[in-house]
Amino acid sequence: MDQQGYGGASSSMSYSQRVMENGISPPNLSEEDIDYLRTELTKVEDEIQTLRQVLLVKEKYATEIRSELGLTPFSNIKQNLSKGWQEVQTSTPYLTASATLDDISNSNIVVRTRESLFHAGHVTSSALSNMGVSITRRLADMRALPLPSPPRLSHTMSVPSMRHSSTFKSFDEVVGSVKRRPSRS
Image (tube, rainbow, N blue to C red; front, top):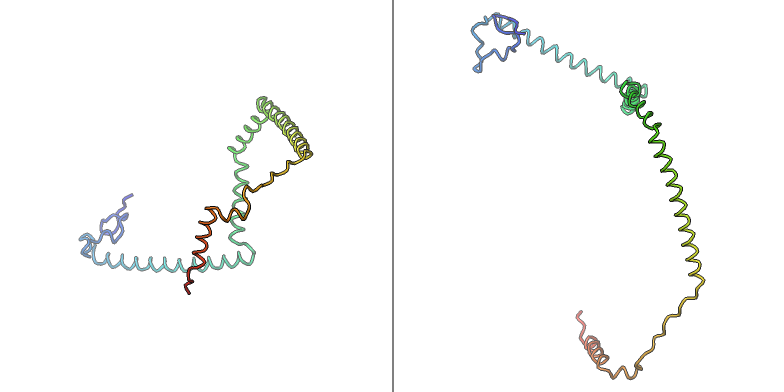
């Protein structure tokens, strides 16, 4: 891939790579070649800048057209996803996998397992229903029973005799001392 350029230099190397660090060009390029290359470089850089500006204008114009057509970025994504899904569904690996899954789902083992699970579901449902009926009956039976009356609280001491007890006196002293304390305002 190494082609010979001006002055025998390799064209795969850029001009700036051929210029030494101190800014002096290699001795195998003539002044005329250097001037020509600099002019070409300036032209190419100007063309690149012009192409970037043209591309920017065209992108803005395309955006305006999409907007007028009602094509939003979301609708573009939606359309791309729909198209991609359509391509997946028509692809050979997808069709092969789909056929294999159909074969598996229609196999003898899967059919018997499906029937067994269906039967187990019915049996479980029936058992839970019977249990619910039993619980409901038991709750109804319990509701029919009379509730026991709460025990009556009986005092072992009368109020006047409580006033003379040591517990009441110590409580009275604490409350009294708090009442007599001057309030801080």
